[in-house]
Length: 257
Ligand SMILES: Nc1ncnc2c1ncn2[C@@H]1O[C@H](COP(=O)(O)OP(=O)(O)O)[C@@H](O)[C@H]1O
Ligand SMILES: CC(C)(COP(=O)(O)O)[C@@H](O)C(=O)NCCC(=O)O
Ligand SMILES: [K+]
Image 1 (cartoon, rainbow, N blue to C red):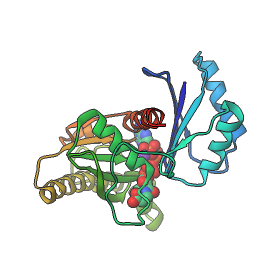
Image 2: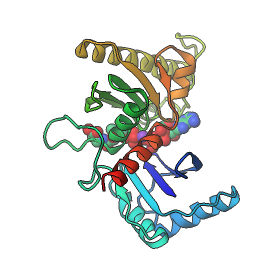
Image 3: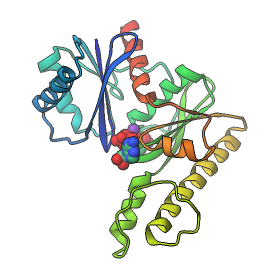
Image 4: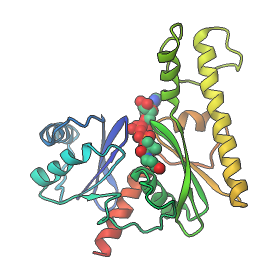
């Protein structure tokens, strides 16, 4: 079975794919110091607890944090006796083209999102990923990744306000009742929530205008549901988009090995 690992700047997600479906998914915070032994104790404990029986024989990794890959490689070698496929490394082939400026190291999560989006929906897509950063990945009609947009993440923006201004508290994001806030927390939530709605609308509209075509907008990532339920910004919300992309890339590399 396949262990797929999606490591973002905030969270790392492990999923086990039995060839047909994901039979277990677990999330931990991203810490590059975590060792292979620590990962294994954590993972095997949760698997036992949820009675997930899996003979892991293969592993694929996408990591936006280069430093964590070393210990994940040790995990693969020591506990699963396999060499992982690492997205972004030359030996990992992608089923789509990447058409960006020479020398650009595109975030592997964005490449995986592109592959997943194209596999599920075909071309002419905008994938919006609400992670630590909010990324927009533009997928051409032939499935190629042709660039995109990187904006500060929702929680990052709230943290920045709190860190930079002495009188602004730490607040969690939620949809405010009104645009005009009548207390500090409501004012901050309004600025970030409605500011983000505007950001997503404007960027998607400009991408479509630049491409001179209609494009499907897919949302994924931790905070996508908040925006999905609150306003009409996306055509589709796809919770496990990145994980799906990892299985597609894994199969592609196996088939063309
Ligand atoms: N269900 C949730 N509700 C609220 N915040 C969440 C939820 N899931 C994730 N987040 C927050 O959203 C941000 C993005 O999370 P995630 O998509 O895991 O980021 P990354 O892939 O960059 O690690 C983080 O700040 C995280 O704490
Ligand atoms: C933009 C990102 C920080 C997003 O990471 P995430 O929010 O998923 O942790 C990541 O994709 C990255 O480090 N990209 C490298 C630069 C690029 O994609 O062009
Ligand atoms: K991500």
